[in-house]
Length: 242
Image (tube, rainbow, N blue to C red):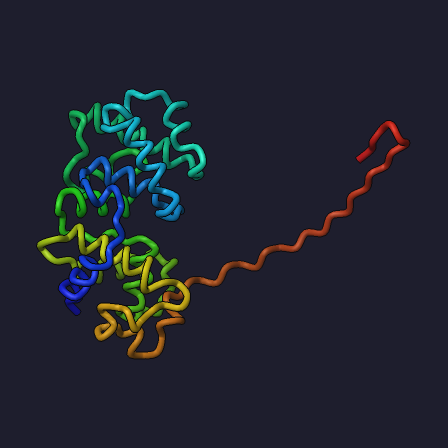
């Protein structure tokens, strides 16, 4: 399909101004990706700036007490992300001399670093030609390639990642991955995608087949059970019986 040129031209003009894009490093990328999971970027930015001001390096994060790390994360939710981030910092300090490893495979072996985060750091910070498949990326690729299988299936996600990797250019792989994320966040949105503003619309198989709003497909969620509970409260004015 070869969408990189058009997508990168769009990204250069449309990308949001974010602190981890102004100054790129493996550590800053790792922190930003951890914070951005399950959280909107508007919320992440001030937390990221405060976190980096207090823990500017992996060493500083590894040496900080757990309670201080959690205090600087307070309000972001999903606190396992903060614990995993500190565990990764400790491993990097003890096993890699205080720096994050440069390969996707080695990053993947750090505690709490999953496939998406490892690919994102390897691509953005170290120029690895790999594809970081997150929710935005899965949606964009499912539409681009008209993949109608459920993206909840491991086999579908493996296929989408292979399709994405084939599109990653040898130069600017990190920008390409960020461009796909940005496209999913700003244009190829879950509802009401703005196809008329999409830089890769001419190459989109889902749009050509009229499937855009139907993709990506997900496995149906099981019906929520209905539980009926009877409650009673008895009081004599001073005592309660539940």
